[in-house]
Length: 149
Image 1: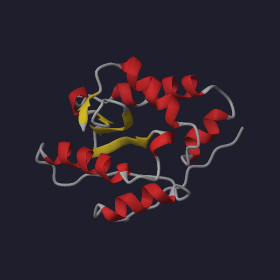
Image 2 (image 1 turned 45 degrees about the vertical axis):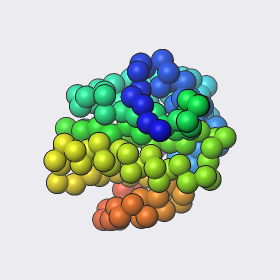
Image 3 (image 1 turned 180 degrees about the vertical axis):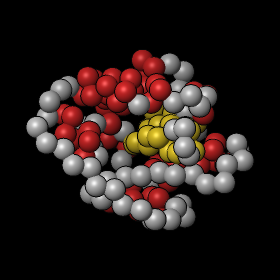
């Protein structure tokens, strides 16, 4: 089942919890310098909160009794409609929920009549890449992020 993400506080708690065991390179790097809550807050404030697209597009996936299993944040980044964030909580990984989350985020954006939806993942996040492939997303571009201290 899906419900709206009602407030930043709940979303931040979910964002912090999905960092446990994440395959996302940015998230893993953040955890070397800060707590999961600090990393989630930074990601939210520096990126997600800045999107001007409606927050009611954002969805939390739950089991029938209401327990969250993950979330998807469809958005528009000023250039393209995107899947801004997609994650499954650690206790629910490997059960196929990623496909349902991606389908819901894609559906929300498709209802806006957009010509395409973009999404990205790290090469090391193979489960996420496979979810995009199963959903029919086309791998058309590669990006390299380089950092130094």
